[in-house]
Structure formats: structure tokens, C-alpha cells
Image (cartoon, rainbow, N blue to C red; front, top):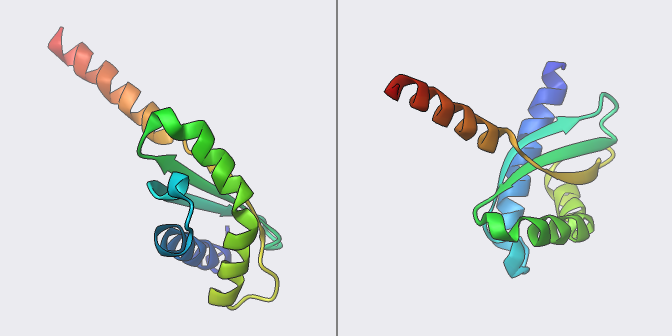
Length: 112
């Protein structure tokens, strides 16, 4: 990935985190953490990876995020100075759960 795309992706993560924390009124979206952003090479598509504080509300939160993606995209267009704002897709980030699972396995091996 080029430096330009990485810089824009970093700005998108920062701005979407702020928008989710302070601008979105939906209570299902309040406890969401943006972990990463993968941009297409032509900047037309962005896959936003998020985690949810309460695992029981994972499905409702992901649905609410994808429903609010139009509003989030509009707010993002006002904050980031690029010609075309990318289409947003929110994806649940499984890497933290996977890392925790691996950590538990290593800890179990050390106990034995």
C-alpha cells in the first residue's frame, strides 16, 4: 500500500472514530472501536474494521453501523479533503478475539 493511501486510511479511522463517538445519535453504535481501514487503490471503497464492547449486541451494532453508513460517509466527506469519498463497509474485526484465543492456549501450555 502506498504512503498516500495509508495516510488517508489513518485519517479515515480517526475521523470515523470521532463521528461514531460524538455525532451519531444511535445508542447501538455508542460503544464501537474502529481498529483498521483498508482502502482500495483507487480510493473508491473502504472496508472499516470495528470491534464492539458488548459481544451480545454484535449483530445489532453491525446492522446499525451499515444502516448509518450514508450519514457517516456524508460527515466524512465534510472532514476529509479528497475528491471522492469512498463507499464504506463496516466489518467486525475478529483478530482481537483470535489473539485472545491464542494467548489463552499459550498460557495453558505454560501451566502444564
